[in-house]
Length: 122
Image (cartoon, helix red, strand yellow):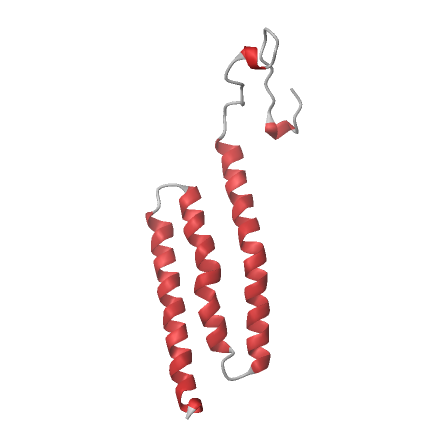
């Protein structure tokens, strides 16, 4: 009885994954800046591919194990890669150097600036 429902379950999981990935693509295209586009793309990586990978291994435990390993790898690396892309974009777009709000906050008459791009050298 349960073996009759397995193809239906696999098809349903694939459709769920495709709907999530399609909505994420629409989110990437509609978002106004890189940060919100990255948010949509990074959520789709895990949430959209998980049902598809599970559906691929629904009949074979070896393929299911490999799919879960791929999913675990995605869950570990997607936030790191999104953060690296966002930080690179921020560094490229940041033309001004950070300055304290007031010189009196540092206790001296002049405010020193620190540029993050040069490793903290003034």
